[in-house]
Length: 171
Image: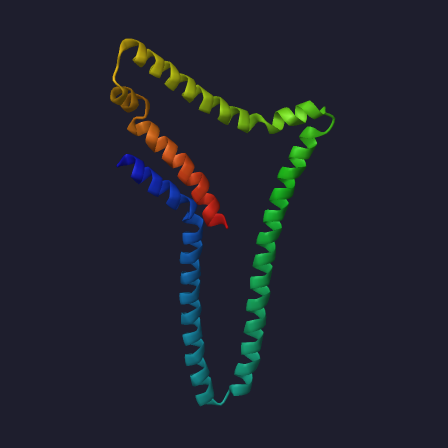
């Protein structure tokens, strides 16, 4: 049960940004609808008062301001993201300057080596426990329950679901 729960939670965590974007978009549309209703009411009142020309000028000016504001917000966000990524890439490039190729390869292999190291450590411990269990005459069912317990299943399912779930939602 813990395995299914952790798998479901991990898979859903990969899609959390998309869900938050959806909720934000929904809220934005609700806000825009309220603004449109307010504008319609204002337009009706202005028509009653005979200020149609002034309303049109104000409406055009408001639309221009909204367009400029949205464009500036998007450009600043995009610019900030680009600057952040360029700073990261520049830092990595600066660390590699003046180093030999084997040092660059070593730096690039840190995460995979650690990942493989922990995987092979798990395999080695499981192999040693299986050998000890066979040597002492433990049944296969007891060894399987000991080696592949709920905690190991949950950890494995969480890693796989988050990794592949995040990639599925990212596309």
